Length: 337
Image (cartoon, rainbow, N blue to C red; front, side, top):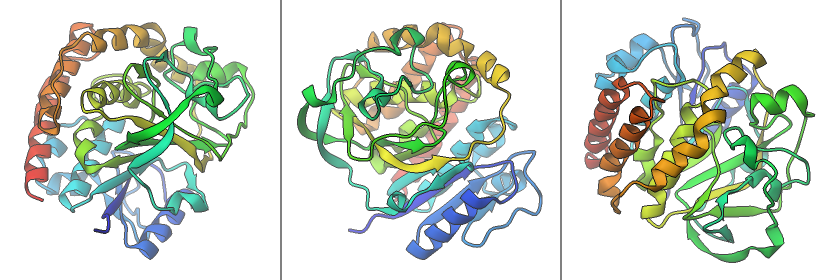
């Protein structure tokens, strides 16, 4: 059966090259293309082949989540996920408005992969499998950036990967520390893939990530934490829950490049401080949780994980109320298809 694919982006800018190319590619292939706006989005935003949701239109959907989710926050992207699921998506690809799709971005995605796999390795600097450069992904604990990553020594096996992170060339997703002191642009090898399985941690982002239907519940981006940590902490929770379901997370060759929007790097550094200080501890605490297997347990597992982050003082307690609404929406939408 042919997959129904949706691409989801959030943007507060005007239509640009990346968004126009995504819209054109989606229209030509019959994909849904959903763009979620926020308070700063232009009122006249319009691109052929793009389904744009202003704040007003988001609220008109009738989704309780659209009413409860804070504005002026990247977590509004959750509304796009819910809309895609409501439209019957079986595969969701998310990216950002400053990422440009390469030709291989449009190639067929396969959930099950015969790839080199890493198990029980603790913290892994995945970027080192794709380059000799001293570079690391945003969210990797700084004490782990020099961890060895020997691709040739890894064994190959079949891995079910309903979450897949694509790399980006030119201006890849690195933290503020890297941007302040290390060289850019950087690019990665295009002939490698690697899956991380149980006991192996590496952050993944929301800039070039593919999700299959069974893992849709794990898409949840927390709203009551730092903007620079929302997708990183989501990735840790998603990995932990993936383990109990026998899933791996695939990291694959670059199929996009980034023409990065303007950032204040010192502000990014400040927003990333909770991660620099606590990411290792977060994953240690997540490993200690008793989670249940089964896709029907994803909602309750998410609750346990976010309760732990609230207990650690890293996420505001209001997150649990918003998560409850997310779980209700997911249950209703997935049951309805």
